[in-house]
Length: 619
Image (cartoon, rainbow, N blue to C red):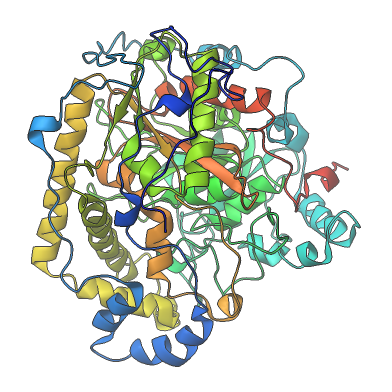
């Protein structure tokens, strides 16, 4: 395990990514190779990388443990967690507002920007403004397929496309068995009510749709819903879209690999350099695979610790989630009528998985309770910061790919922008903060999952048929004492204060890897038994869970493939404020980053190994 990441040595030649001399005298720019040496925080990673075959472990050890009293302690031991958790975070108050100076000697700290004009603008004006931030002509990728290509697509076309692709010589023998119709879709594709003249949008099967059961990834018969979650109802009422339920891998979102024995085979659309099936990431797995494979243009997901952003980054697409609240008092996505509507402290946010930023914008304007405003036009005034802590925790190949994207963006758009270097978790002064924050999220989110498990959102039959993995997770949540919950809330409050100190010094958006590792191989026994894999989930979500703790919006963008495994890498743009920088304000900046991935072959996404979009023809 690397203790730190050493950047490539700078030379006098132009950087192949930044196209900028490393000895440039331009004080407004620094090459990605000149970023400060990362802290030695990979050694303080929450859990080490690696995988073991937990299929037999689940069958012969976890299943018996799920029915005995001391199971939570045993599960913590198996997952590498301390029995006393979480420890308290500690942020260095004296160092919060220190001046940031890069290796070129440039002092790039600024004061917080003025919020700007909050007068609302029309959706059409916003979408037109966003469309004008575009890459050079002729550089579109498979991710930029227009929405019109799905107009009139119906379930017969989708089912036919999957079957034709699996029979095609273009798919390897391994790829043909990786993804099935049942693995993606919760409802049978023969279900009535799927309109032929609208654009299909997948909905994660924990949202409420009138007339359907929200399975939450559980077996058993559930309660038929009498109303549709409000923001989804708004999307459907726009008369452009129709809804199709897709699987939520991991019951109640209690996992990040995206493997659920309840459903058929589901794998990542990318097989990597070794050609083996990979995890799709969870828990909005069905939606992410449906988008990445070209079956639908957008998927609605929920995100309590990365459940939108992890599968989006893992499958090479865009994922965006809203924050906890806005100054207006209205949520960006109104969850009224859903499982999380009445919990004001919920860590669960809503959002979309899509092919590109334009599709994210279109789905947001059709379903958000909030209108875009004039501040969107001033997005170039947003102060950016590279999170050195997250870069240090991430796998070196993942961190380097993210830095390449940042360097390309700076060369094209950011030479006059304020870009700082920050330590979001303050690991230089308090290396234990990474574990403390991740475990605080485990306590808070686990407690919320337990509330949902015991609520009327689930039926008695669903609870009775819960897999041993979920029963054990719920036992673990029951073991969280009031003191542990208080510590977790105090840590969240301290973290928010630390974030405010960054806002005060002009940081509006923080750049970091989405997940610290690329998708791993699906391991033997996993599809049959599932995974009681809290260790693996913590490994994947330790960076995404930060936005949930802080309650801020975030967008992940694909920035190419890592050089070792050839798997997708995601870069996150995370707002530092739930009020002043919502998804509308982030999207123009995200569009700039998306543009440089189109214009640089080393950052472009290859078409997935498993892609059904080429077979999806209207009749």
